[in-house]
Image (cartoon, rainbow, N blue to C red; front, side):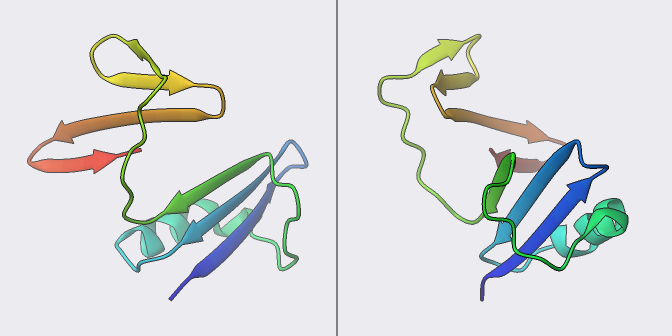
Length: 88
């Protein structure tokens, strides 16, 4: 089940979050961004975040420090904190 959330933060940044799998992010997102949520669908958001399982594609990337992979239009980072693992 895909859910889309559209936000307009003081006309400075338009953000779209696409969530393809329900998670604890539902509550956290709502708590942090609920005041900025808009009902209209954003055609060209400034930032689009897709929350879903994925396979990183780090070919042709520059590695910054030993934990960030970067190329034009792409950033990948994997981290562990207090027993939790996340990728972005």
